Image 1 (cartoon, rainbow, N blue to C red):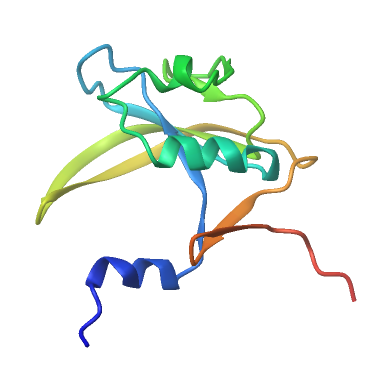
Image 2 (image 1 turned 90 degrees about the vertical axis):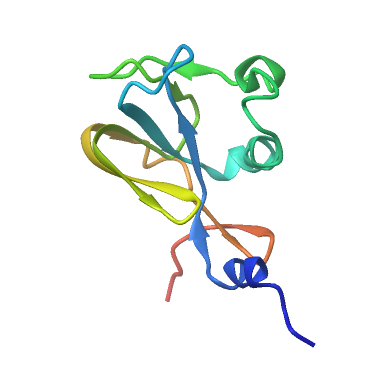
Length: 130
């Protein structure tokens, strides 16, 4: 039996990032990658299963925002890290658009624990002690 190709992506562990933009109906060349903390697993699930075109996710899921340092796109409060990114260029690749961006500002909350996603489960990235 042949397996579907989209299922292959679940085999690779990856960071959980929540993307925010300040577009007001248009792409304006900036976004924030918010690295989810272990306290944001429920939020990550909610955001991952809905599309922004269908609703205002900030209102629907009561997402608290923080002011960015340099750009207009909001940060998500409670994230492990937030990276403010300015788009340098965009390239078409098959049915996707790949963005090359520069991080122009960032913040990290070392008191929080980032999470990874693997095989449809979330795992806190806690340092192993020996």
